[in-house]
Image 1 (cartoon, rainbow, N blue to C red):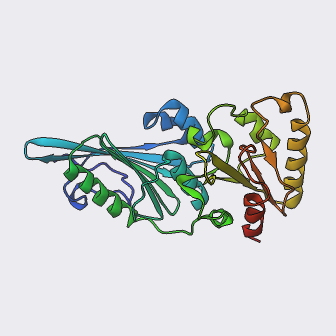
Image 2: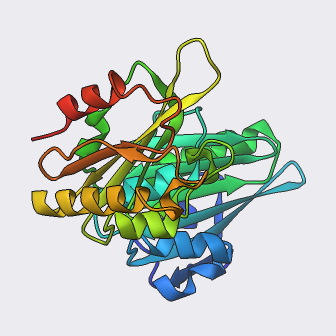
Image 3: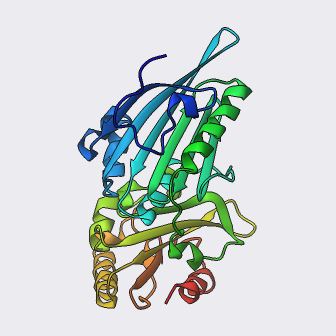
Length: 292
């Protein structure tokens, strides 16, 4: 058995603590070196959350003459909100499991798990199609999660009606460019960098995006909520957005479905599916549910 690497964080099990798994490799990653664990474009989206760093580890399991592998990437965030957001952007799967504060699961081929606990966002995967490997990966993730302190989920999750939510299609971000493609209706997506600038998004703002069923159609309502540090920031963002939407550029097809309700305190609520969105029902309800 190879020697255990020095500096392994407490939440990652050593070989003697990992059930059937043997720790094979381990590396600490700075925010600037995330590309060693994830694709370049994904690393850019992750850095928008202001991660402090990450840990990458691989485990091996030999059984019945076959070998299974498991990959773990753990991102350390500055807050539970950022860690939660990282997890939502890692997977839009409607399949969840009771593991940590949130776990979304993508299966076939292999198994991929995106898990939030406290200030950590975990990505665990095995390429093996073997059921036993998936079962053991779940046990490994449960062991890791049990070593990470819990924190409360973001308050903004309570600000939308849950009955109409489309499972898995809720995201929390600091910048709109961190959102996956599933956060948008097909075609005519606005320039997300420009929209983020109009909304004044920075490390101190938080955005919650939620997709909802539209009765008797296949369309989805997509509502976004921005939480600012102060009410005047929300008002200024609302004014900037409306001023731009009144220009020729803002009236183009990509922006026609973008709109925002008047701000409520330090919150701004809007949508980029205005053609489907019922402003008479869903958005007023969201405004009522916003935390004080």
